[in-house]
Length: 232
Image (cartoon, rainbow, N blue to C red; front, side):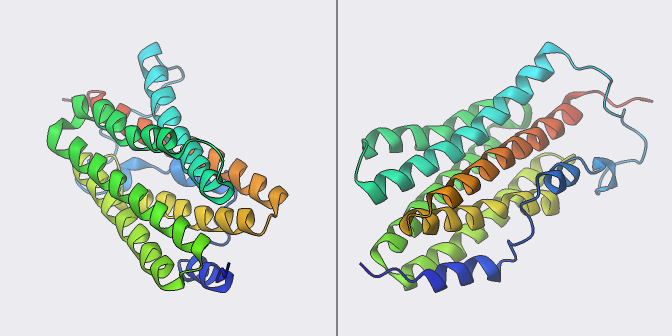
């Protein structure tokens, strides 16, 4: 079996993924001042409170869980395809159910159109992710390159979709955070194929931590959106 590892690494390097795996840097980026972005009045909305309600805590947990589940089931797909173990149909059922749950969570705040668009983009991201994994396993660099380009294109479209439905989310911030997912997935797949299991576990831990950052940023934007602004 021929695997073009250099091609996969080059894809990662081309998108400047190196140096972005520091958890503290993620957290600082995810908590930038949201009022700096367009269509907002500086100082118009309240700063985060010293405590949060049960509803807000549930919102944070919901979004953290969804991003974490996405990372977990994507890895399960990788492991299943490489080893031949596990039930791939059951994994796909779980994986493709995640966009639907996202839609259910976002729709009450941003409406059917935005929620469905986000779910569709996430669904297409999963499809391209699986194409990339299969191409790496079979040693098909052309298909892997094309899938990698598509993954980053969908990242940009997802970031744009989220920024359009909520002025308290920044497209640049979403793109910065989401850009880490393809790069880490590529490195994780290479580590699994090369049987570098300690390295793969380290990447998995980083991805799970990053999933929490994505969940926090999503929940933060929703909470700013639904909390009435002061001075009106």
